[in-house]
Image (cartoon, rainbow, N blue to C red; front, side, top):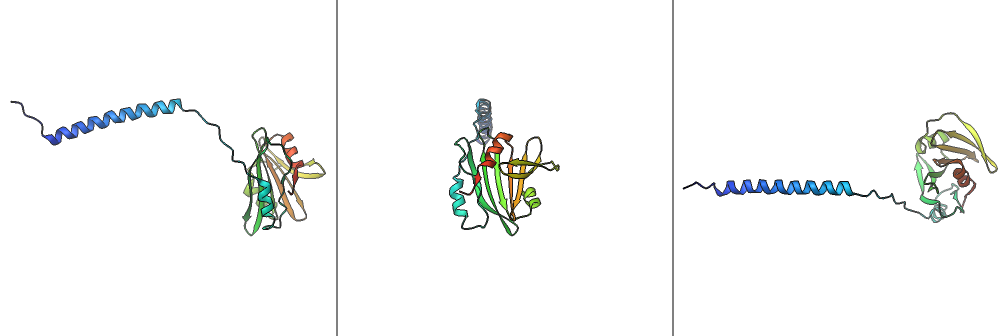
Length: 177
């Protein structure tokens, strides 16, 4: 008569075989899902920057500038009052029709502090650019454009990755709502 394996050894070997089969099945399924996935477009969350600006006007002495009157192809994605050190900063960011980023930053903070905190640009060569009836100081590299101006002790920075046409339209529309 043949000897049977003890029941505990049969259970362990069966369990190992079952786990191996399940592992192979999970691996095949994960590979199928990975190879057939569809990259979805990033969704943009729109904010009503003008309503936020009106609420912020009572909490800050800064002009709550933003692009008033842009068409609906421009999507506002952020608007808020922040603090750098002891001073407040008003920011509005939008996505342009060409899906580039443009923002306005307003503060009484030193311009160097604002540039370090909010702008990623390598250029140190400063020129000027006139838009509308104002002349801005300009820093520019291959991707980024930074326009800034000091008026009555308030520093205003426009940071853009958009082309000059869109950046100019944005700057020309800057007003307090």
